[in-house]
Amino acid sequence: PQAELARVREQLRGLGARLQQGYRARRVLAGQENAAARQRLAGAAQRLDRAVAGLIGGHQDRIDRLARLQESLSHRSALARGFALVHDDSGALVRSVAQAPPGTGLDIEIADGRIQARAGIAIPDPPARPRLRRRLKRADSDDQGSLF
Image (cartoon, rainbow, N blue to C red; front, side, top):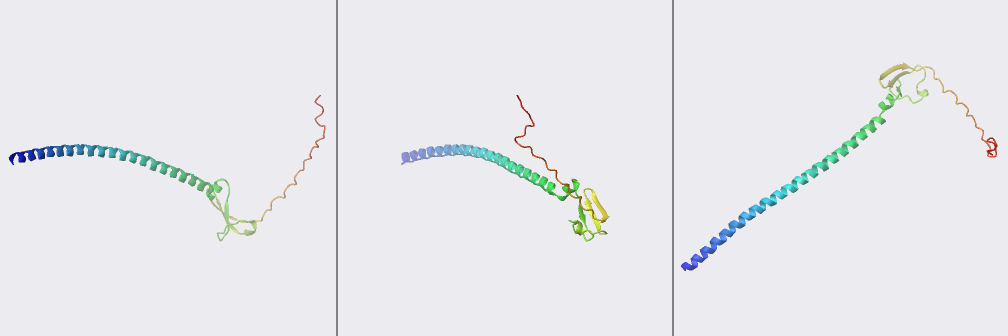
């Protein structure tokens, strides 16, 4: 029995030593796996940052283009190009001469402010000039003459 007990004790010590060695190896392996996972996570975070920055940059460019388009289509841009908005006394937009008979108060909006005015006599557009007709040369015309 003593010999048997000593043999079992020796087996247990060996198993305990192997268990400790396995535990240490597993801790080292887990640390390495953890470090590799951290590196993969850091790489993924960098890729995500670049992707988000690209998306934001693309959206910002689109917003800037749309803002420029909106500004170019704004009535303020038309005013800056020399056009005017004309409103009558009631604030309605005047679109034709018939809407502003003589004596009508007008509010004229231009690029840098407003002007108050009163409608006078409507001046008709000058008549269109007749188009001059060009005479077509005939194909058999000898205007050029001989080259020989």
